[in-house]
Image (tube, rainbow, N blue to C red):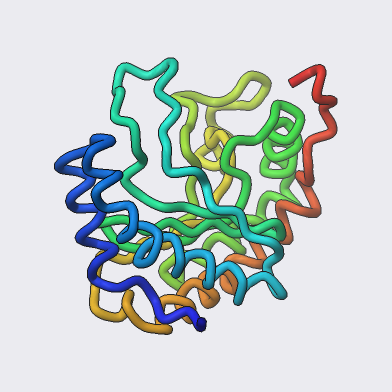
Length: 215
């Protein structure tokens, strides 16, 4: 079966889940989730695997052990790809991103050093400007209110230094094309446009070198 986007039933499923986030709703509508939500995501990942690596769909259940929100289910489906890439779908639409979302301490240190360096830092700025010109947002999941320790508050790239990570992101609201193959085309276009930023991250940050014991 080829990927043909997410049907209207997928949006309706998540709209219902947002209204009634209960086990009863989930069980009554699980067949809709399996066929209209998860199956398209799995087919998309299979088609993208050759270029972007093996895909993994996140489990639909929320981890509520340490949360005041005891809603049992996530109101979106999301997946990652082993060579870089994140896709999410919900009643709000489609999102695609890449980069370093929650860096380990050693990665964050290398990221800030590379941003602070005039050579590599200015290069990153140009790459970000090129991505933003294509409608891609470059940001982080969180940021400091002031300069990180050891860096001047008046650094020319202080806005980047305050970021706790670096991700590219593009989001589209619900539209008819989400139920067509155009969804895959737009996802691939964004991942291609983000490659220069990701290549910079691979070269100057890379994977964590911290051992599992130190995590």
